[in-house]
Amino acid sequence: MVGNLLTIVLFTFKQRCLVYFAVDSEQVWMTTKLAKENTYFLPFNKGHNHGAGNPIGNNGEYRTSYLWLEVLQKDSLLDILARFLHLKVKETKIITDTGIKYQKKETLIFPRYHQLNLVRKLIKHSQENKAGHNYLIQHSAGSGKSNSIAWLAHRLANLHDHQNEKIFHTVV
Image (tube, rainbow, N blue to C red; front, side):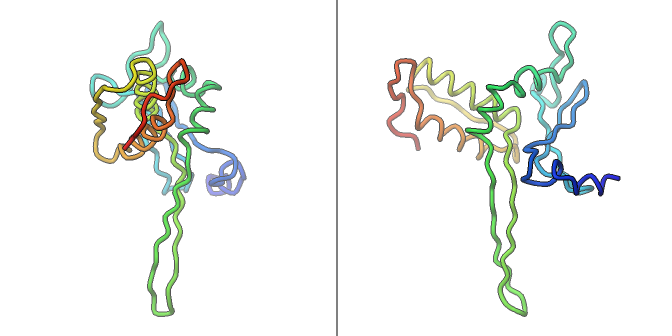
C-alpha cells in the first residue's frame, strides 16, 4: 500500500507538496521527500528546558499547537515560500571504467522551527534596534547553522527600518 502511495503526484518529490509533517499531541517531525523506508524525518519542535520536545501548551492546547497557530498561518507560509525554501542541487563526478558519469542529488530545504524562530527574531530586533549589536548563533552540530546564517545574512543585507532607511550598509 505505501509503495503505491508514492506513485501519486501529491507524494512525488518536487511536484505538489513542499513538506510533510508527522504530528501528534507532543511532537512534530518533518520531511521534504518521501522515500519509503529511506524517508528521513527531522524534528520540527520548539525545544523545552534547553532540550528536545515542546513546552506545555497554553490554556490546554496541545504541545504542538504552534504548528498551526504560528507556522501554518498564511503570512508565515508565504514568508517561508519567499525567503526560506530552496532546492539544493549537488552534482558529483563519478569516474567509471566506461567513462565519466555525473550523479545529481536534489534536496528541498525547508527551515526547521528553530531556524525560522532565529531568523525572524533577529530580523525583528534589528529593525527595532538598528545595527551595532552582537549575536551568537548557537545550534548543535548538524542542526542547520549554515542555512540559518545564510538566510539571516540575505535578509539583513536588504533590511530597512520602519522609516524605510537601510539598516546595514555591509553584511559579511
